[in-house]
Image (tube, one colour):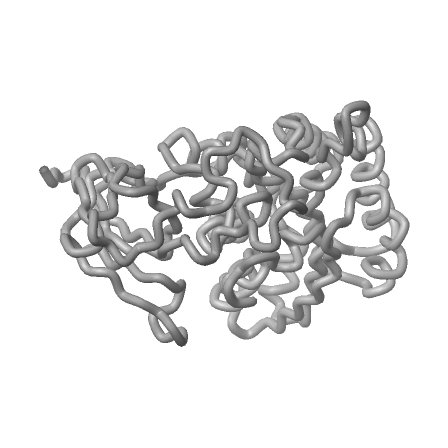
Length: 336
């Protein structure tokens, strides 16, 4: 029941995969009638299919649970090649993604809080120098540095990648400033290789803002005797050196991005991503950088009942459009 302390909020493009007629938890409960379910992020996309309530799915509005019907047109994730496996190696399958199974959902829900799902570790630093430049209507260059997630990996459109969402929010807040985004992220890269190209691909560009998004590939298990491709100690050294070089050679402010959580059933998931996230949080406090704590928000999503498969478009380590929105949310309070 709506009360004076209840706020109506909108959830857009939440992603989920469904199995048979099993109930699957949406991010929020207390959902209001009028759920919009479709096959593509944008309803105008070619091939988009709108699914009908009671024909294709049913919703428990109070609990925030959605299920396929027996005759549903929604793809059954039980048909996915890795369904039911306790471990899988993506290299064994020509198509291991969730692209053909994922659906997108918009809905409104009732909340007793004004803000849902904020990071557990709120940033202690803000982008003060950058904000002064934006307020002064200066031209600002933002360099995106990271692995395949930071290339926009598996966002259905570039505009849905987290860095694009952040850039558009900055432009909306400071419409008279000029913001240029230069993406220098590289798929499959860890922090050691990134450090080797830092001078050429970041520092030489004279950025005003740099976001650094590593940890996902660093943590990967590479075999029975190699738990992490780049061990936590070396990862910390690499990130520290990146920050120090950028600060010494440019006027850029820095955002460290903690990684999301890979599918624990993926053969190369070490289960150590929390360690890498903690390193980045500690370095941000020690070195005075900003931090976007994606990892904390991802944990909140899982604790709320979301499945790994519903957050990862490639079913391994790339966020869906909704996952990129979670990344963007972690940037939310860096720009007032």
